Length: 105
Image 1: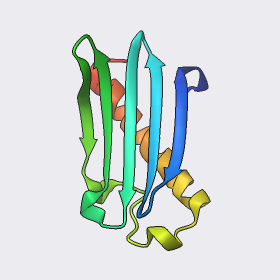
Image 2: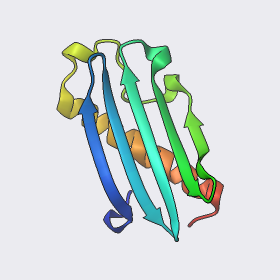
Image 3: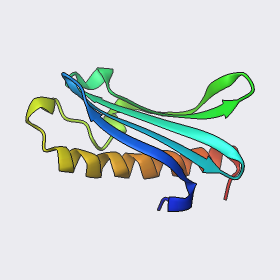
Image 4: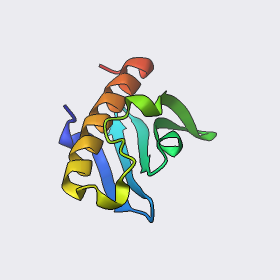
């Protein structure tokens, strides 16, 4: 579960052939970004987390596209509220894994 106090911002958007999610979080004095893209072509979909450092955004974790909950090859016909629910599942999984990698409890 994501602690609301950790959230800086969350954005959901729909592209021509994709649904997109961007979340930024402040956890244990670290800034983490999550990007999830659900494309009509599954192999172009991704879910990644990044850590902001002095050198910019560095990748923490990349979830294989076939593990992403939001995947569908019918983006144009997909229910937006169902997509947001799936994004939230992926967001929680990726954030949890990222915290473990960074040693954050």
